[in-house]
Amino acid sequence: MIVSGAIEQRVDAAVDAWLRWVPGWTPGTHRGRARLCRRCTGSPMLAAAGLTSDVPHQVTHALVSRMQRIIDRRVDEFTEQQLPMLHAELTGEQMWRAGGYDPAAGLDPEYEGLDPDPDPADGEQPFLFTLAGLAEESRSEPLLPRPPLSADEKRQLRREVELADRCAEEAGRAVCFALMAHRSRIESAVRRFVEPQIRAMLDELSRNLEPPQ
Ligand SMILES: [Zn+2]
Image (cartoon, rainbow, N blue to C red; front, side, top):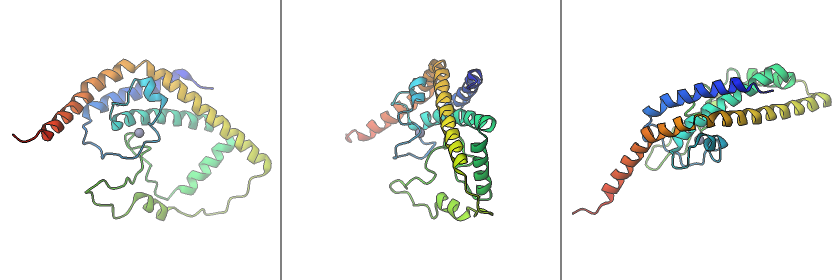
């Protein structure tokens, strides 16, 4: 059910986009994150890409999010074409949300999947309002109550959710497989653009730690 050629092409394009993004990365580009990232931690995509734990999270996250978009898009396409009940449920949900403010909509891949309201770091001012709070306030109520699903419809919906999960797994595997072909390009970008900045930061740190003469 997966068109693996299409996934491969999308991975090629997404890796190209990430390679264009990496040279502009600096350690201060994004705010530091203390929490563990659910999307990156233990992701088989990072192993496939050859990105080890020494690589800063912002750099890995930017790649993983781009790959996740490919998987999500594949599942969306499959749902639209093959899973009529789930598709109807999801489009109903979208209409229900329409008009509300979704803090996760339209983010750059570097920010996708991150908590939109990280805890303020030490010495930082806490936010006056949170994006999640704003989303809560602006969420519109459904116009009409939905008719309840019959037992048959529920069964079919569960079956379609399983198929969508399976599609996501297959797409994930195809993405990992395609990523392996780009490992050397990814590793050399990290060596060239990321590692020197990390070394400079560490040098700076150790200079500051030296006792005054
Ligand atoms: Zn991450």
